[in-house]
Length: 276
Ligand SMILES: C[S@@+](CC[C@H](N)C(=O)[O-])C[C@H]1O[C@@H](n2cnc3c(N)ncnc32)[C@H](O)[C@@H]1O
Image (cartoon, rainbow, N blue to C red; front, side):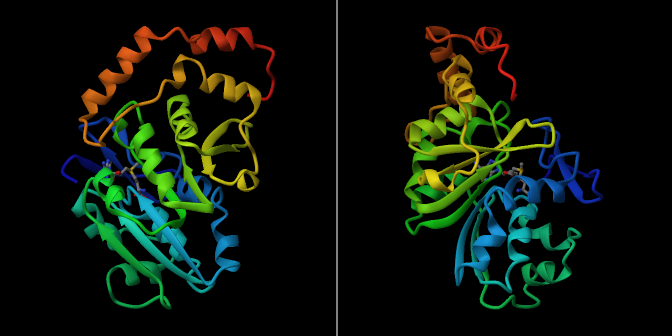
């Protein structure tokens, strides 16, 4: 938290900015809006709460908790059990004090009330260490890590293999990230991939599942091709214990030695492709 500064995002909700990484925790467009559009809607969360008695959610990179808070808003539909991972303890501590559209949720997080049988359990540690220790599968996984070009640690092939181990056939993982290197890492881990489109028809969210039928908008041929260019060379972190600079270096070496087509050349060759 010592490097995080608060700012008001365009939907009026509070966001944070990390000075050390020069990276935002929340979209300037709206922290609350981002949570709904990039996590709750793509995971079909509300519908899931209407068709189950309970949901197990893994919220990776809890921050000040928008994604968990929005998930908990459906507590009256079914029991929601959340395991939330965040290595910055202070963020978890201030989370109940950050204004939220539904005050009950903050009261719950502050331990002042219950929400049926719903529960949240925090892991204040590096998410790589935590996921290795988890065994019971989740219905939904939210991955809201810092952008891969700022901090690649939670975007490696090996990390996605661990997440895959924690998913059942009908589970879904959603992330705001649509970087080619991230999509390729998910692909190599064995996920079926899809996207969510914004109002300009740009693919800006990635959804992943083991079950193809859960992917409403699969990546198309052009996007699969793009993922297989040099831009899609993934981050690697064998043992899940490398530093960020080691992970960057490993990718840089693979990039230099790669015979794959570059993304710009690929885009030029496919310039008639219309839906991007
Ligand atoms: C983009 S912000 C997430 C915002 C958050 N979902 C929210 O609603 O406020 C990324 C968060 O991931 C945390 N983080 C980054 N790397 C981590 C790691 N390896 N393990 C655990 N937390 C990490 C950061 O401290 C930061 O709070």
